[in-house]
Length: 116
Image (cartoon, rainbow, N blue to C red; front, side, top):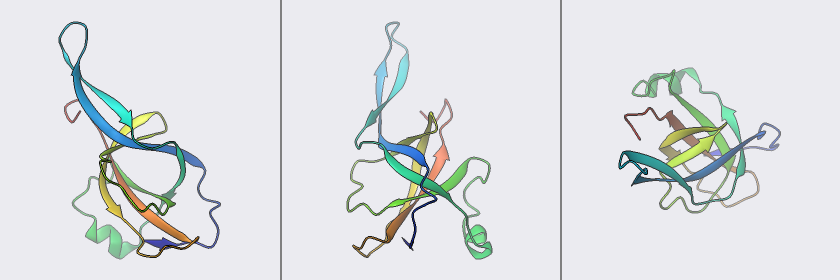
């Protein structure tokens, strides 16, 4: 939910998808990331003080927000790969406008071994 005049901050690659539960050769449960989109560019997004207070439910050391070009559809997207690590997509704040300056804010939360 952002209107940016310049997209210079989009310097990192991110891939959106989902995690499928499976088993390895020994029958142990594993989680495999399945991409639902091709890689796209994103950038880290800072919060205002008011937004930080509203964001208290998230662990600040394990969650952060990225901005991407607006997408019309996020169906099936539950996870993302960013900088070689797996994150859960914990919030999607879409821009309601369909124009070249529209951007969406995506909250990513670090996935730990017990989360999948």
